[in-house]
Amino acid sequence: MKKLIFILGLFYCGGIYAQTDTTMIEQYCQVVASQKIFSNKVTIDIDFGEARGLFQTNKVKDENGKSKTFNTVIDALNYLGKDGWRLVNAFPISNSTKDNTNTYYYYVFKKYFPKNDAANSGE
Image (tube, rainbow, N blue to C red):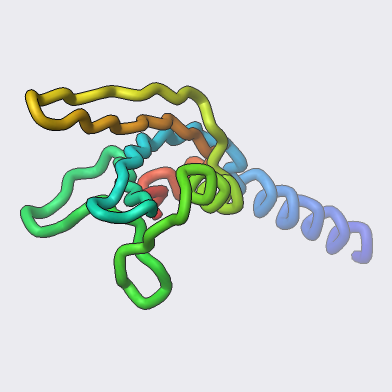
């Protein structure tokens, strides 16, 4: 009788383990850093690839829901690095007009998420 209970227990535990999906999926995001007007600080926009509403922005928010500003681009990159994002590529794009030149810095990051959580990866 003890052997039968032991064997049934093994099948039960084995069945639970077999249902766990540990597959990881790469998810990417694009970060755009731009200089704030009349300031030395930078603003960061993050595109996780999901659709936005008309009045929604991609600005990084702090714990109070306000747009987070960073002292430098490196400060922003370190912020994302602490959250587990890894830098893949970086490149600048300049937009010149007759009076002004604006340079935007683009960064591509990736992070691994469990397959089941990949749909909710836009943090």
